[in-house]
Amino acid sequence: LLRLNFSRTRFLIPKYIVWATIPYVLLSLLMLTAVLFTQQAARLAEVLLYADLPFFVVASIAATLLPGVLTFTIPLATLAGIVIGFSRMGTDSEIVAMRSAGVGTWTMLWPVLLLGMLLTIPTIYIQLEEAPRAARELEKVALQGALAKLDSPVEPRSFSTLPRYVIYVRDGDKALGTWGRVFIYGQQADHSTQIFTARSGRIDSSGNQSELVLGDVLAAKLPAADATGEKSYVVERSDQLRISINTGREDIVRRLDEHNTNADTMDWSELRARTQSGDPQAKLEATRILNRRTALATAPLVFSMLAGALGLRVRRGGRSVGVILSLVVVIVYYLMSLLGESLARAGSVSPYIGPWLATLFTVSLAVILLLKNRISLFSFVRTGPAKKEDKEYP
Image 1 (cartoon, rainbow, N blue to C red):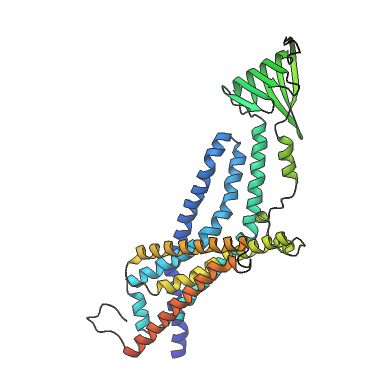
Image 2: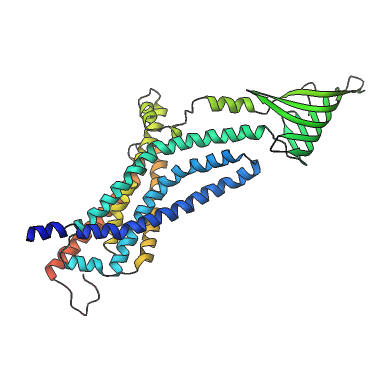
């Protein structure tokens, strides 16, 4: 009977700790993701609104931002949720009661480590696969948006500049890419000047080429001055005129077609292949990025360990203390991460060590706190419970 009761109750405390921290983890994840996603989207909003891109381009850019946001919010939510959960239990004296009942540090710590390990799994996948793919997609969507912008690069009632041409459009429909009452001033390579007035106009793009198509055109050409300083001009009228122009479309199409060799946009397998390449500089860069992503991917597990060590020492303050501790830890962690990344990029430390500097610091701090916690527990066992008039246990 005693064995049966023990098997039923030995998981009662870990189960309670998990259910006490999960709501705060989920709430922190939701709030942090919403805040960071809004911040990232707002940073692009001005550019997107100015460019007046199609809706599908804007929606695609928004979708590609989410994996990058989750790589930061999942570790932060793990840290904040566990610290806040333990802070709430510490304020309610539940941790003190557990210790009085003989519950050890490991019994209270391993549930949050398990939670951190479970959250590490999606973070590893997002960090090594989805985030690089999203970065490639973001660049691709940006180029597609630039192509869409080239279909109607001229704003009505404003002067617009294309290579060798200045265009003013009195009326226009940006959705259809059509213009009305057009004035164009062009400076040619032979120093001659061309002036066009047209009742309608548009840009036709096919493949890498773009043409300026004008309807009901009056064209005037002013040649460069001759040796005597005299000038003559020619005026022609036509129903339709096509002018080949360079809008930069060829370069954008080429960048869309070519394979991106930027190491920041490579996934796990591509980075591993580059670390085996013969170019020493590319090899070091790929090694640094690979270790940086792996270190950031294991952040939920590392943060859960530190959050448990911090939470077990909180006795007063409740959720506010948990939030403050989380902010301090996050600031220190990412400052150490930036320092290690900078040292590795400069060659001051090995690319195998620099990206892990923040992780090593966090784990060391967690171990020190756990050892101090263990010493405090042994002291409590030797001296026994405090008297009623004592406000805290030693």
